[in-house]
Image (cartoon, rainbow, N blue to C red; front, top):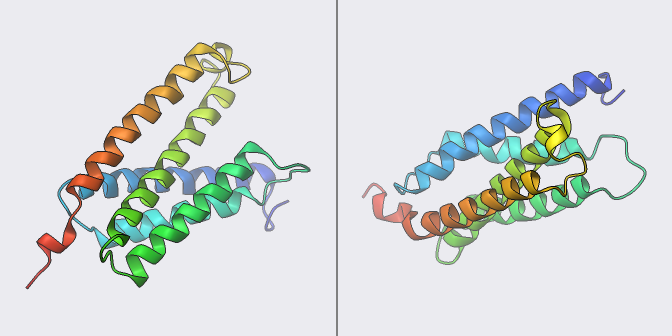
Amino acid sequence: MILGLSIPTFTLLHVIISLIGIASGLIVLFGMFGSHRLPGWTALFLLTTVLTSATGFLFPATTLTPGAIFGIISLVVLLAALIALYVFHLGGAWRWIYVGGAVIALYLNIFVLIVQSFQKIPFLHPLAPTGSEPPFLAAEGALLVIFVALGIAALLKFHPERHAAP
């Protein structure tokens, strides 16, 4: 039991939170291309992404796992993004710190989604049973290339101060 829930029920809750974080994160990311802050979507993305990492630490583990390492990295970049957005209001270098943190956190969530998909989805698992086979590496490599391009585009295009009300 985790937080009074069976492990399967807690796992389902964790997955739902993760998927909400990914969906809202994609909305926020694409909003950045038009310099839109989308405060409600952004708060939902940041909250669910923090919860995704935090709830990941509640699963039983006896050693430091790759998932825990990803969770730690995600929480660090999310902390920077939260400070940049809510404390420094994206002023100066905090704009790119926010964009970078948000994009990296979203990338990490989707990276884990791909890992879990290859581990849990019956038709994908035989393609990469150990997570080191070419289909898995191709999927993760493509994700990295896509997110580097999206991150650069977001950094170049996200200038909400240009669209602020006078």
